[in-house]
Length: 143
Image 1 (tube, rainbow, N blue to C red):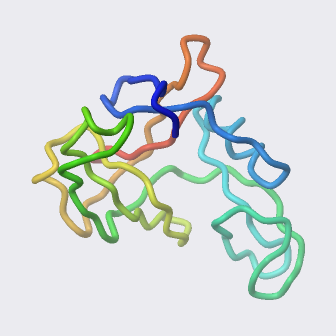
Image 2 (tube, helix red, strand yellow; image 1 turned 135 degrees about the horizontal axis):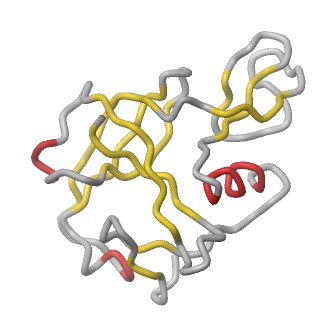
Image 3 (spheres, rainbow, N blue to C red; image 1 turned 135 degrees about the vertical axis):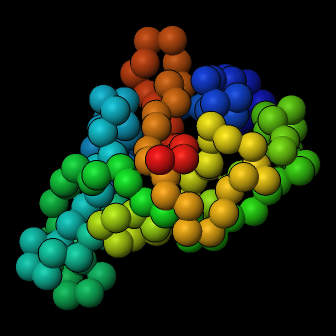
């Protein structure tokens, strides 16, 4: 993240995502307000981090829309951020266990950091990165 990152609705900085062949559908979905994951066509395992082949059985994966629901698996409160995050502290960095199974790292927004608890139900929200809403960062808020 660069120092010219933009503040958005959550108060956390966001910068334009870096696209590659494996993550472009994820970022395009986020811009549309959809949380997309890859899922194995053979064993139906949801795969995070996105990749074209399942790490369980090496079968191809395809993109599917996730529910956007999950629970806080683990979290920490950052009290002193760096660069564009320096003015945003304190903020919560968490692993969210999605209803579909995978755990993804994100921020918890929409509540005070001391209100976040392991096992807390959360739902995805999308912070626009730019005024044109071409890009968005998935974050989670209390359900």
